[in-house]
Length: 502
Ligand code: HEM
Ligand SMILES: *[C@@H]1O[C@H](CO)[C@@H](O)[C@H](O)[C@H]1NC(C)=O
Ligand SMILES: *[C@@H]1O[C@H](CO)[C@@H](O)[C@H](O)[C@H]1NC(C)=O
Image 1 (cartoon, rainbow, N blue to C red):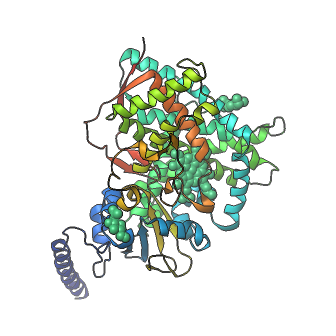
Image 2 (tube, protein in one colour; image 1 turned 30 degrees about the horizontal axis):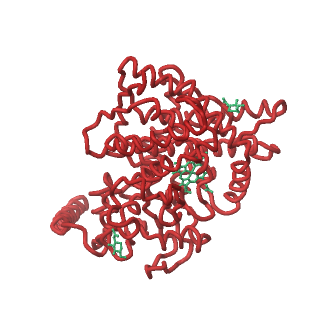
Image 3 (cartoon, helix red, strand yellow; image 1 turned 180 degrees about the vertical axis):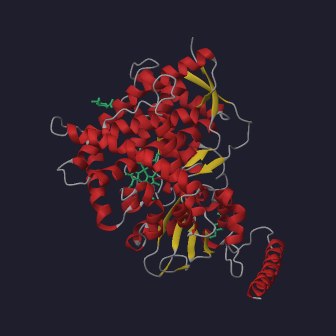
């Protein structure tokens, strides 16, 4: 009897659900003027599930249509929050009211398995200590020289030869993969003075670790996208599916990081290094686990960001030969002025003179920001500058991808790739970090910005002056992206390269 009544109840409930979803479906027309659609009981969940595979386009569309480009988001399981594309609100959360918007517990817990307590994943005192140590190091002249020398070396002994070879054999390359390998080798050299050699030879070595790192980042960020926020815990507990894969990839990543730290701690007595890790090893107060978290955070910061920016930059250039010509012209003027030949390395001053190139790269990141959405938590109830209420423990995300597509920030032609909008009398201007939060803003602003530009400009200049890049994708169609912690192209960027001069 009891079993029977249970089935009966289930039947009633299913019928209810059926009609409920029918009702939702009938209402799923275009987005309203009022931001995210809120359904009874399920909040934004139905639309979220329908659109999570195209999260960026979906949120951009909604934010462009609503008051002050800001909307409230509700999901069952108490995931409430605000998503914004408004510079005033970005300034409020990242600077003016910084103390009220930490990373927060939800973010930290979801990423803790992967990032531990590294700089990206901490708040309060623990963050402050790391920030202080790292920013001291980033500001030294020695590190900048170190970085440029490592970039130059990686370019001349690995990247350029690979491209020469591919040009000769007319081999198809996945350019995104090559750029990731470059950035990976490079950040390991600069941060830990270790050479993982991912770009050696035919660029297939170190693959297992690279893949594991990528999986760990993608799967960790995938945890934010579950329909029911606690679901991953059950999967993790049962060691199932994506959670099983995640734990395996994290184990591989940890092993690699531990090896770096062990070898460096052994060497500590003998040598003095000028890299980042040595600052943290410093007086020997930090535990090996903590050093490991630092290593992983820096690899994440340095590997995925510049390679993402450059992949989209080269893709954009492939349909804009006029812009490519302008870059080549600027490089030629700089070479002539400094009596240099194609293939010579550029120094700091010459890189600084590349205003047009800087503008072209910044413009690519405006449309395809390497970190497209960034999220904080709200500590206490607050009223945002446009009057929107935000409650304690809600999340708040600013959508950098959407901000690059807002007419009230970038004028009518906001969707057009146009480096000129950055130039003022030939100088690439600094945009307000609240309008252009590609490198974040306020006290937690990206520490690697200058270093990133040095790397990206060196790579772009050396490649473009020597090679023509033929992108083998359908013309005029934007590559699909993967939304991990960073914005990457799904399926990579297949290219053929050819040498410009003979
Ligand atoms: C195009 C390249 C880059 C972009 C677009 C970028 C963007 C960002 C963003 C959006 C954040 C804030 C993340 C958050 O707290 O939620 C950040 C933080 C950070 N970035 Fe970058 N980054 C780039 C390159 C680099 C490089 C090459 C390094 C270093 C080697 C680096 C080191 C850091 C560090 C240490 C932080 C943490 C700052 C803190 O929490 O106090 N970044 N970056
Ligand atoms: C952003 O919000 C403003 C009003 O605050 C509105 O005029 C504008 O159309 C919105 N969208 C875009 C794309 O600018
Ligand atoms: C990075 O560059 C510095 C300075 O030239 C050099 O001493 C160091 O060995 C390089 N690191 C690696 C791993 O190649």
